[in-house]
Image (cartoon, rainbow, N blue to C red; front, side, top):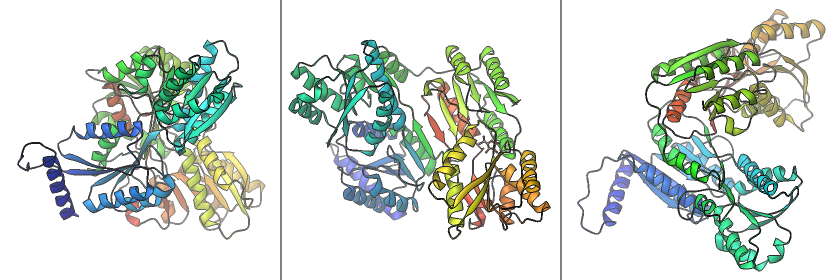
Length: 613
Ligand code: GYE
């Protein structure tokens, strides 16, 4: 591999020199990292923007070189490109896949040898180092909201939309939420799907089919290129009355932001490429930095004439906060071993980042926690961090924080409010944790006819409980062999779980095949009570749990718990990095999802060692 890289470095030097007009001595280079980039095409505007951002970011580092290959929308060529980059001996692959289905197995193979960062379109499964992309469902909803706002301003209770899509998975998922948003308001929609998402394609289609514009009030084009093509067609067809909403919202003369500024289109939704983040994380991954997330979901914004200048201003002039950063953190009480590890990680990271952290502990209710946040607002903290006990009821206090211009970070658990009320969510994908528990159970009980499940739920109304429940039930849905015959709230605590399982045993003949515990403390409590009743946990009844704490992994190695799905509490470094970035004026991703694994009796022993909780 080293030889290959030397060849690659020499090749790069030759390319660099051949590109020059005058003879240049081959510079002694200090290239340390060679990053391969495979792009599905360079015909779409957003990929050109992506390429520029990758190159601009890489240019910040002398030690980094990119080798960028363009697959020209051919999966075969993208596969060959990936092979060629591996041949070059690149240290890491950044890939923006075209056909996700075709590229998933190829990316999985590459990931066995070198780190892989996937951009924009997520692949099946988790065989990659990091995914960076937008929330396409949110983008669809935002486009729908923009159209409802435009129709409302025109005093139109109803209205008709023409949606111009392009043939891609991202377009499909955006369209789903877009249609849901406008149909809830009774807006009629017709969709057309163009083979190519280009300006000419859109302009030519509309000019050839003016009848499609009959009764149309607004056009929604799935990228600003097509939006511009629609604009040109409407000019020629004398239909300037039709409003236009685009997508992507890039800077630059041909970008959607300028089109909104010049009134060519009425609105757009920004769709960041993630190119800069990809290079930054690539260097961290190559340097084996800890705390690398698994997924980074980028934020998108609704842009109209009345906020386009402010948006661009904010992105260009990042307001820096000088001096000590003061953070107020509303943490939940010591409800579990997980919580203890979480608290320790956050306090240690605050020290390491030299951030002044004030922790309000032990809130036992939503009202108590909101009072703590209100106090932080009164104390004029630079940032407020919240681990919300429950998901509902946060709209008012987060609006107060926004009015006070105090940014809020949600960590560990999520709340149900619109995305504008918080800077970022840093934590786990609870639905996926629930799916992992169920997938393990399906494999473990494949030969069984009927499986009775006892579910031990965590704190009622908290996002981990809702997510783990939804994910688990999604996987067993439709398979009648699996029945959740008993579901009870153990509030994430060992004591409550013990009481509940004991009550069940006192009132029922034991007929449970699998216990699904939303956290380790409840799984351990249940195992203890089973032993009192001479039922062997892990043998007479299978136990699957979430968190990955030391006590649970010990029980797993003793065979008393059968599967532990990790929920990483060590969020401190990611939280403090996010706060530091925020104070430097950077926009944070909408969600930063932690990297987690699954432990079973087949997990290699070394993975149980050197764990920090
Ligand atoms: O699973 C549990 C803790 O919010 C994800 O809360 C966290 C959960 C965790 O009590 O052990």
